[in-house]
Structures are given as structure tokens and as C-alpha cells.
Amino acid sequence: MKIELKLKDAWYWGSGFAMLAMASISMYLDNPLPMLAVALPLILLDRAYIIPVLLFIACIEGSFSSEDSSSQAESLAILFIGPLFIYDFFHHNKVKVPYKFVLLFLIFGIFVIWGTIVFKMNNDIEQYLANVIIGASSLTTGVVVKSIMKVIKIAFFFFYLKSLINYDRSVLYRGLTIMKDFVPYLFVCILADMVLFGAETSKFDTLHFGEAKHGDFTANLDALGYVLMIGIFEKSTTWFKRFVALCGVGMLFFMIMELASRNGLLCLLLMGGIGGLVGIWHMEMGFKVLVVSAAVAAVGVGFYFFQDSPTIQRLIYYQEEREGGDRLAYWLGGALALQEEPFFGLGGNEAASYYAVDKYSPDADVEGHVMHNTFLEFAVEYGLVGECFYLVFIFIILYHAWKNFFFAIKYEDILLTVPSVAFFISIFAGLFVSRVWESTLWYNIVLTFAIYVLWRKPVEDALSKRKAYLIHGLPDPILDPSLPVRVVL
Image (cartoon, rainbow, N blue to C red):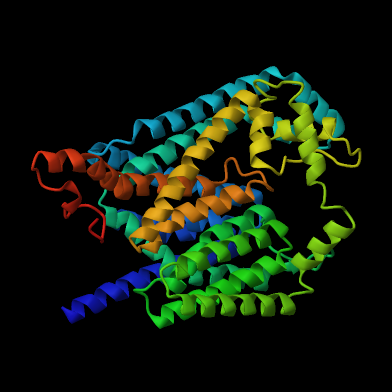
């Protein structure tokens, strides 16, 4: 038995480090195939690996040196993993996706199709961009192809959810555990690529590498980095793993400070605050004070040593010299553009944002740009009708994320808070960058819904039946040993 356990541990850690080694090679070669070559066999053996593989790819793709390779990474992952979901659909189809979630995915797909029709009918955008912005024609090419890819992505996310909820809860839990164990080492790979192959830019001495757009990239790092806080505070972990997770937080802080991302720094503080709150929730007051004091001291020391970092320099420059930057001009341009097509928008393509900023921004020096606000971008592209749907869409996800969060806190299984907090960090970053189709956001939506179906819903159903069962002398449904709770109510 002891030998068997050691072999199991050797396989677990060996396969995980092999995947990360291939991730490093993928970043070096600017090609996602090496990582996928190891990740796909692991997924075939254990579906739990789908969770870390998809989130890891979404995180490292900013390290690729070309935009084509970055988009190719996710496309290849969907191409290879999609058939597995189709297979699962025909062989594991007992649990149905709740109708409210089906409607959300379906209506989102309808808006994508409708947005494409509206965009193709709006000839002013292509003509205007072609006259004003050099090379802007590339923004409008392949609109139909991009829309088809968006619909395929929505279908992929739906089948991802379908596959997760039709396996045992242990699959999803194992996937989150793999993330908790290997995210610190993934950050080692990303940091090594950043230090070895990054180059300092002339402005702010930013250590830039790959095709990473620092706002999105750092937001993804922060969302994934929340699992490090679980690694530090989870009761069942070892002190060595706590130390490794703590080192991971340090590496994350270093990367954020070197990438000159104000959004990344804000999300990092948010991540640390929520993670610390979760960690000390059930501690005694004296220990809470000790942990908070140590955390405040660590943050103070960190900012002292990085006071001249690119992120702090950029923050000071934009606040003192540029009055916060150009985002206000982008947002005003988007708001004024809604007056032209208030109900159905300018069309479901990023070129609509460029057009809105270029034409309507009150600042004449601001050129066409993405909206840098997820909610406003959706409004510009799909109009107020689309915006109403998107707000409902996000509200429903946040509601379930909130309920999942407190469910996990109540039953002291804080690993289950990861998708909820990761989604919240991602959508919070969406207030300052455009993230409608950001993969990290969608993957955490799927995980949030899956935790509801696999953990919360059985307990809520049992509680709703409890009174009637007890009145009729039937067994208490909340005492069912199959329910995912560790405390008897």
C-alpha cells in the first residue's frame, strides 16, 4: 500500500512538472503544441486536468511573441479538447444543465449573430476607419469568421459545463487541487521567460515580453494567483506547500510591478485582500490580528523596495501628467456613440470601438482604440438591448459566485471559493480593460456554474424538502451521506 501510494504521488508530480516543462518550451518556441502534446494524454487519462490546462494556456498565451501564436494556443486547445466533450455528451449525459444556464448561453449566441448582421449593415465603420487609421482594414476583415469562432466558443463553454457536471464531484475538486499545487511552479516558468527573454522598454523601463497586453495579462495572473492564497491558508496543506505558495505570491508581485500595469496592481491588492479574508475567517481573533499585521508589514516592505518600479512610475505619471490617462476619452467616445445607434449598437466587432473612439471622443489627440471597459464595449457593439442582457448575465453569475463563496466558507472548504473569486477579479478588471471574450473569464463562469450544480444545488434541494419530509415521518434529506457537506445542519 505504501509503495502504491508513493508511485501515485510520483506520477502526480511527475506528470504535472512534465506539463509545466513543456509549457516553458512552448513559451520559448512560441508554439503551444509542446504543452498540448503532454496535456492532452493527461486529459484522456483524467478529465480533471482539463481545468488547469485551459486556465494555464489562457495565462501563458500572453508570453508568446506573436499574436497569431497567442490566439492559436486557445484555438488548438478547443480543437483538441472539444471532441472529448462531444464524447462525454454521448456517454455521460445523466445530469442536465439547468435551463436558466442554457438560456444564458443560447441568448449570448443569438446576440453574437445579430451583432454580426448589424456590423455588416454598417458601412460607415469600414469606410471611416480606412480613411482615418492606417491598416484599419484588418480590423474589419474576417468578421463572419470571427463571429463563427465566437459561437463555437460559446458551444465549447456549454459542453465544458455539461462534461464537468456529469462526472463525479471529485473530478472538479481534483482539477482545482492540481491548480493549487502547480500554479506556483507555473509562475516560476512565466517569470523565467520574462527575465530571460523580456526587454526593457524605453518608457518606464517596463520589462516587456511576448505579445502580452499588460492589462489583460496581469488580470489573468491575478485571477489565477488567488489559488496561491488557498495554498497558504488551507488547513490540510503542509508547511512546505505553504512556503511554495508564499513564494508564488512574491513572484506574482514582482511580475505585476515590472509590467507597468495599474489594473494589475489594483487586482493584485483585491486578490490579496479577499484571499486573506478567506484565510482568517475561522481563526481566533488574536491570530487574525497577527496575520493582518504581518500582511500589512509585508505589503509596506514590498512597496518600499518597488517604489521606483515601472508600475509605480506609470501610476504617478498618468495621475500627475495625464490626469488618469486616456480611458476617460475612450469612455466618453463610447457613450456618445450610443446616441447614433442606441438600441442595437454599431455591430459586434472590436472595430466598432475603434470607430466610436475615433469619431466621438472629445479629445482630438486620442486615436481609435478598444473601449477599455467591458460593459461599455458591449453596449457600443450590441446597443442598450444587448447591454441589458449582459448586465443580467453578469448579475446571475455574480449571484451564484456569491452563494458559492459563502457555501465554501460555511463548510470550511475554501478551495471551492477559487472560481467565484477568480471570476470576480476578472470581471472587476473588465471595468478598465475590454474582456468580453477573455478566456479566463469564461472558464471561471463554467466552474462557478459547475460548483452550483454539484455542491450547492443538492443541499438546497434537500433543504427545500426537509420540512415536508419531517412532517410525514420520512428520513431527513439533509442527512443523506451523498450530499457534499461536512457539517450536519
